[in-house]
Length: 551
Image (tube, rainbow, N blue to C red; front, top):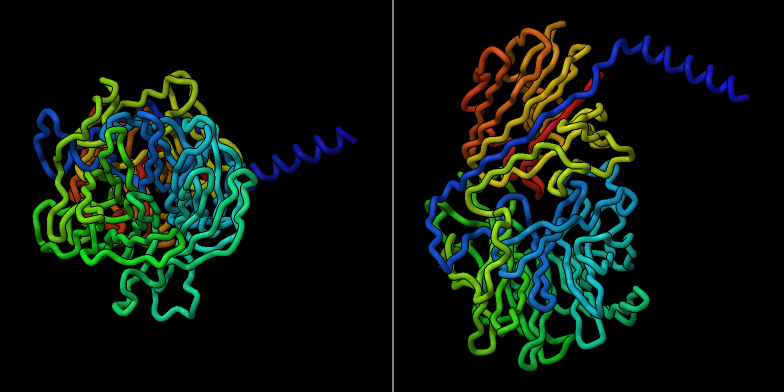
């Protein structure tokens, strides 16, 4: 029986090869280089820090403290590995230590658009265990995972039986409660009408117990039709329960509001001075704007000071930003029994006084300001900052003596499958990203090079391909489209490696390539607005890196 199966398998393989023709060899990539500079140029003096504290696509930050250590996690949607986890001892110098979702078996992102899957995680710590509670949108809803070490490994998800998004755990003594955004206890009065609910969480059994209670209906004043009350967190201070939450949607109208109650289950009274954080009333044409501020979480230092992490954006044009929503940090002050982050109408500073904490480990690579790095692919595994799109069913890459080798998988844009694409976040509007690729296309359309991806319908490819039987360097784009547009191409002689460089400057990009005999520019001044969140839609930022696809 075995020989019959083997012969049949060989026959099928031969038939497939005859139908498709020769296949290109895998693509090989030598190094990935990144250099970035912020569009706002500021001076950071001793005793100060720079905002954002995490540059680029690191939205919806959640923070917790254990002793003198701080841990932070952000959203990652369908990018895999996902839920990046960071550590700091001074609140301003952050180092990624792991990804909470790093095994394909934990969550299945199959068939999901880039901006679905894991939204707004919350991290906390209790009784020797770290908890992340989260929502997998269109892939199972709410769940929690745990780890003894925040660097991982994290457990498989335990699913929770309630709808909505943005769950957060509030610990009170040895009891726990989950607060989150759900539908209101009445028919929605308008689009974006949501509510905040609470229910007890038995952390020993991983079960929800008791009744759910609606704490906030609509927002701080339902008569004004507030939208998307979400990202709630509860803290207890001086006999009051304080609930902070985002309101207005994660765009220009985003804000952070606060309510308080003498009882955990309410009634909650909104602060008369709300919002406690927003940039929505500032002039739209101001220089170097920071916008969309909200989705905050508080943390208290050992000396009693309070700080807030939150998301905001840095547009290069009218609500145009390609690098996504970022993580910012500001102090929280308490006056008259209420917390304050920033007065309405005051701009979020790019430079502020550092927390009164010992400086973190010298030499920690910066994740903010102007910086660069080189990944030489000389380790046994990829750095944890590399991400793909959706959870792969099988590996498509390997490291080989300083080369990253990619085998072809799905075509980029095929939402149902996983492309052979590995990227890193573009963390600055002004950035240079380059790699050297060794690839010989075997058929027209075969390609390998750099991709810059915002979504399944908004991306570009710059690299080696075959056009009309000849090897070319080409630039293709998709602007909320199902098919490619050829922007520029040039024939490339021989079969040797080609060095590819993308130069981003706000809303434009330029594309250089170099062979053994010359360096040339294929395209300058490309309007890269199609890589902005505004044009592409969704919640992510641009991810850039090696990609291969063959027929």
